[in-house]
Length: 118
Image (cartoon, rainbow, N blue to C red; front, side, top):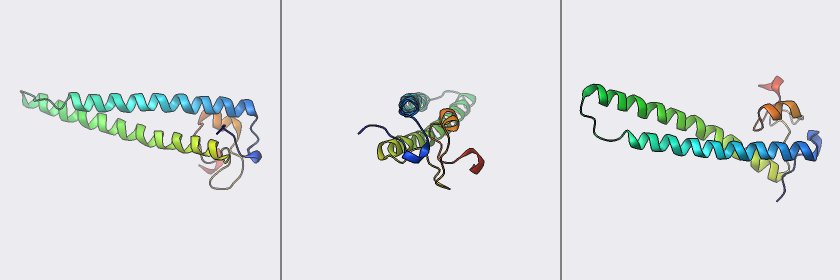
């Protein structure tokens, strides 16, 4: 199904194509980052010989988990924006139903609210 914004969103076909491409690229980058964070967490699961090594390993696993969780939340937001593009509801605020605006969507393509609603 082709990507499309809601007719009231005020986005041109070129805007929609640009935003769709940005969302797809961000999705790829996030999926890569999540995989790398998982690989980093797995790599630090080995046996540490010294207490300070174990503490460093725990700290690194915690940091990787936090990064992975942050990326997973952003990935969910990107996926939701792509679904709105497929469904033709992209570009309208989930709060007010008003157009989000092309400049805000260029800055944050997965935005669900206008800047003055955030």
